[in-house]
Length: 248
Ligand code: SF4
Ligand code: F3S
Ligand code: FES
Image 1: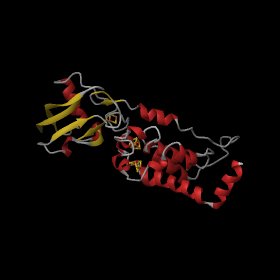
Image 2: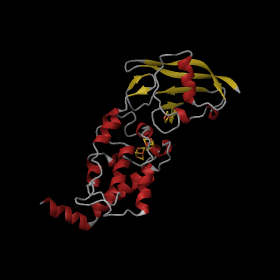
Image 3: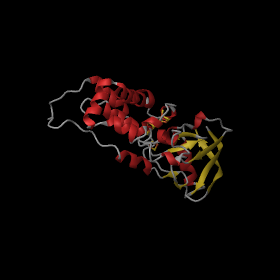
Image 4: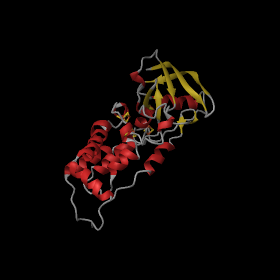
């Protein structure tokens, strides 16, 4: 079954842009990315869109569809009414390069600010066995495809350019949580999370979790436990005393 649909796509660059209307053919089983490709093949050869796998695994095709952050390759046309106008715009939190392509380097900067896994010195392969529960915990976080939909959605940085420097965003606070909960990691993640990566700016609205295409429970399984660990440490009398003694 084929029908025509009204698409509206944001076209422009880092200086100016506008929504442009396109009537376009839609066939059964297609996703939004198929329609963008049809527009490129027919009416808008120069329309810029980033994509790679068309299977929900590379995290490249993140856009906003009718105002909702989504993967274009995983959004079925059948979820919309045939009369509905489908508006596709670039991610709002990152600067536009052209059309639907944004500059997501904010995320690479944040990734680089987190020190990598730090096992205790002298540990040899085979010296340590992880419990299955610890393996499974980090496995969930490792499903991340780095689509940055959570980073784009979090209200702390969405429309708040001024917060970007102090806030790592849900994806990277989750990375810190993963390392902090790793039984072998010896780095002090909690202090850095609070003081350098803006953990306190997250007020657990869970919008990040809602948009995650991998259904990772970012807030419940990473951010809240990390906040609890930071609080426990702050109010644990022994930890508090230790931090005072070692400061001298
Ligand atoms: Fe995307 Fe989920 Fe990873 Fe965030 S945590 S970047 S929403 S896959
Ligand atoms: Fe932002 Fe997610 Fe926290 S949306 S405020 S990081 S729970
Ligand atoms: Fe790879 Fe959509 S093209 S996730």
